[in-house]
Image 1 (cartoon, rainbow, N blue to C red):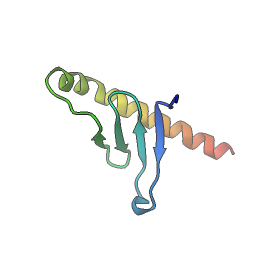
Image 2 (spheres, rainbow, N blue to C red):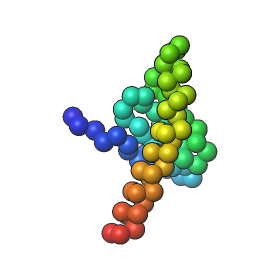
Image 3 (tube, rainbow, N blue to C red):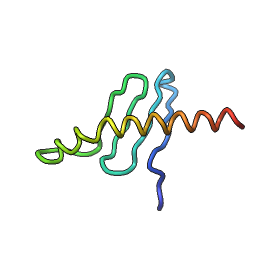
Length: 76
């Protein structure tokens, strides 16, 4: 199955939150309201350093994805 890099997540129990799921390595869910990240990977040693270098970029890409999706919903 070919998955998109990002998915929007929604849950009525957390109606004030905006979740973006990153499906590629490193896999995570970010809550765009407070930038809290839940990682699906276990990082150690070199992986931790690589992760720290990529976090800002991944958060930026997740935010751009969300903005693009919201613009598309407005156009419909």
